[in-house]
Amino acid sequence: MRQVLLAPRLNLRSLILLLTILSVTCLFVFALFFVNYTVKERLIDNSLALNAEYSSRIAAHTNYQFEEILKNLSFSAKLLGKDFTNTSLRNTEAARLKSQSGNFNSVFLADREGRIISFFPTTLNIDAKQIYTTHGITESIKRKQTYISSPYWSSTKKLIVIISEPIFDAQGQYLGFVAGTIYLQSKNLVSEMLASKYGYKKNYTYVMDDQNQIIFHADTRQIGQEVQAGDGLTTMLPQQDGSFRLMNSKGIDSLVGFSHIPSVNWVVVSQQPIEELFAQANSIIIKVSIGISLFYLFIFFVVWRLSGLIALPLNHLAKMASMLSRQDVQDKINEIKPSYFEVNQFKNSLMLSCQNFNEKIDELNQSVNTDPLTGLYNRRGMNLFIEEFVRMRTDFAVLAADIDFFKKVNDTYGHDKGDIVLQRLANVMQYHFRDNDVCCRSGGEEFIILMAASDPIKVFQAAERLRKAVEITEMGEIGIVTISIGIAYWPHSSEDVEEVLRMADQKLYQAKREGRNCTR
Image (cartoon, rainbow, N blue to C red; front, side, top):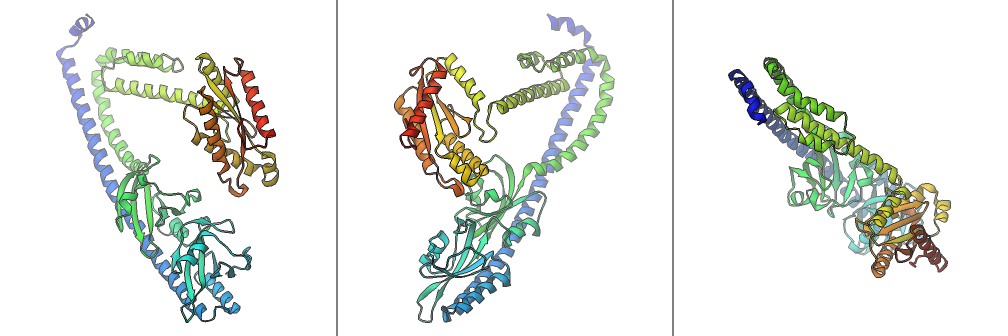
């Protein structure tokens, strides 16, 4: 009925103007799409070529460096094989290898048993009488050939790669080896090249070894991590070099160039986030949009007689904009039927603003209810879940966990190391429990886990899985810590939630009294 009443207002002139607006709008959208597609495709092609060239340059230069390194080590090994017992010769060669090329962070010689008998710099904390069994030394002795290790932690607590060359006497008897180390988390020959030699437009570069482990990265936290299949391994491993577009395991759309280093069988990978590239395309598109928009101003001036139809939905949307905090505002915005492109855009923008507003509120609530150190729920957040469980009459178990001798950890290693233990325990806890289980830090070294379950056997098994996982988890230089766990159930232990929490605490302290590192 309403459409019938409005129909007489639409004369021929109005229909022509509406048709004109529709035609121009279609041309505008098509032009933007074409420009957007063409510019971005050209930029992508150029960037892929540049990343491939960049990684190839790094690989070629690094390959040359490592060929020289291997030649130097081979020369030293032959020289040392002639007089291996000559302490002066050993020390001189170690110092020469370290100082001459500058490619190693340290150089050492080891005998066939694994004793480090010469090293440089001499300030290293090394006992010449001790037999070392670190990964690099053990593998070098075992293989008795040129060996380049995967990343591992040395006896001096450094993440390193070693390059070793075996030493044989004139009769072919194995005497030991000479090796140079590269400290992966310090300045070294590859990291300096990645940082400065061929830098290009906000890309980042890393190097992985033949075991797919990252051995050089601008972000040292990534060193030692394994490159996943979703990060382009299936494309990079079969080919010597190349480039491709990749959506990696972190959900980042990137342009990738790669090249192998033949002498050490490593791969140099250069990645550039595509969003950085598209920022350039957007600048061009904005200029095109501005030009077309100026023409639209003239068109809108012509259709001012349609202001009534334009103003009505805009007026409704403007009212909605002042009520973003209301829970039903999105439903009310959806009820508005846009009659043309701009109203639809305004509506979508307002919907997006409403969503962003709600997300910000959720973020604020999240920050209030979580522990900033571990990312687990705090006591306030825990109480919210308990209230919901009780309201829904959902049976749940309370697991109270406490780190054994945590005060001793803080007193011995400091609170910074203690915080690292808390964070790693939180990570282990989240990994071993389901998404619908609620992991909380109730204070200090005390944690509470809420499990929506009533089967004591399954709850006990879950608690034991956590305890055993913690028992084998390395906490950095602190080593191994253990936890004690106490369990209580709602409503089986008590209908009073506070009483259930107290009972879980009592079980926890029982576990402490009975020797710790157990579940009660």
